Image (cartoon, rainbow, N blue to C red):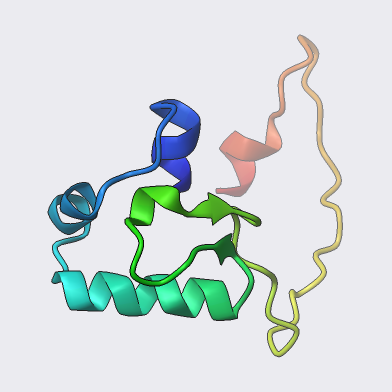
Length: 90
């Protein structure tokens, strides 16, 4: 939905969502209701999907999964300014 809104300047119709997702209309409507419940979109059931308004276009970070903090790698620079560790360490 966000892709259509941003790149094609319109919200997708139910038929477009069927074609692009490969899902049945009932599954699409169920998904829209879930997006409304999770506050990703504003949409009134029994109206066309193209009447939806996107509130948040990206998935939220799930706090149950912590990202591993990585240590910055020290770079080795060649005489010409190139990164030689790519060729020597991998």
